[in-house]
Amino acid sequence: MAPPFQFVPRALRLKGVREPANPPRKRPPPKVRSCPEDRLCTFVEQNEVTSSAAPPTSDEDQQSLALAFRDKTTEADTSNSQDQIRPRSDTAHGSKHTEASVTEDYLAQIVCGVDLLFTDYAIQSRKGSKWLKDHYQHDPRGNEYIAIKDIVDHPYIDRLRPTPTEALIRRALQEKASMFLEISEDGTLVRRNPFFYPYKFTPENSFSEVDDSGVTYWHQKTVYIEPHDLTLVKNPAKFSWYLQTQVFRGDIWLPIQHILPMHKSCAFVVTTRNVVQQEAWTHIDIPISWKVMSWVEHKKRTEEYLEILQNEKEELEAEAENEVKRKNGSQRKRGGRIKKKRKHEETSEQPTPPVEPPPKKNSAQGHGTKIFFED
Image 1 (cartoon, rainbow, N blue to C red):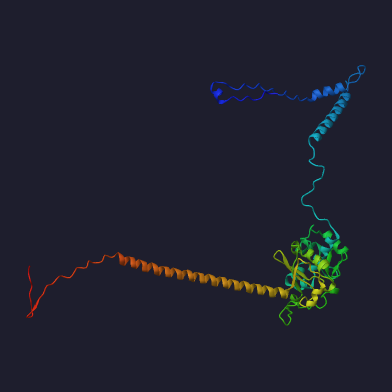
Image 2 (tube, one colour; image 1 turned 90 degrees about the vertical axis):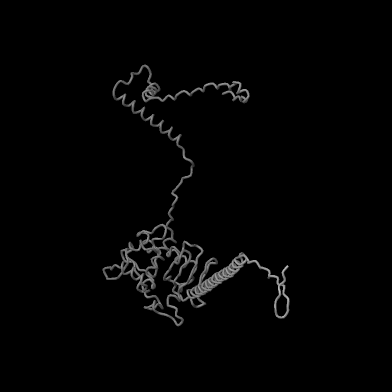
């Protein structure tokens, strides 16, 4: 053990006293790494036969001895490396991004997404009908179908997790069959069931039909929803499945015709039932944290809100204009005061001429003549 450090005060250090020198440290002996030849000699000595036996002189004996030495050396190196490299924990660490499993609800969500592609709203709307016409295929009988492989990339289906494949969509349509869909015999094509198109009470020109109050046919069936889970709005297929299983009770609301996401927290949902009538809301289970209203009520509230904003804007503009006028008036008054003050200062600074006294006059009256007296 090294001796403790001895402190020398500054007064003694000035006189030449120094700390005792520490003894030199002993270097550790170098590690001796055995070479393969030394390990081979040790192995031969450990496995040496009795003196009566003959040494391995033939090539086969030497080769077998070398193979045995190599196997033993490999085992020793492997055991040492395993001892040095130890796992940090016994629990297995998987990937950070785990994919969701394929469940019955997931298959039902796929079917709801495919249903949205073939609703009356989608078939009669401009955007939906264009997509269908671009992807229609004809079977040998001349019927129009949509290939399942073309549905995989549609936004309604592509946003589900895990991402659906053609095999998963085919499996979902077979296990969770919808009465509004019809699959071809080979299972690769799907179309709207002709028996349910058009759906009951749906006019052929639904987008041009307007009631007496000026509300269109589909706006009468539109509901404004702000759900508690914002991820539902981003995924129309999952949102449609949730509404059908948790919110809308009875087949009178179904099928869900269309879902139009708005911003990031709300969406317009087009149902099959007229929601303008007040008795329609008795067959709906609205969660407490949700905001749900009809399209007509939402439009009315939006107009009232915009009117309030416009009034507030006008009031702010009037206040700003009055403030500007007040500032301008105060500046004018201040400018007038400054001018008067300057004028007063200018007049006060001018020198006043001295006032000369009037001359003294001594006069006397007499006979109309003036007589001046001299001293």
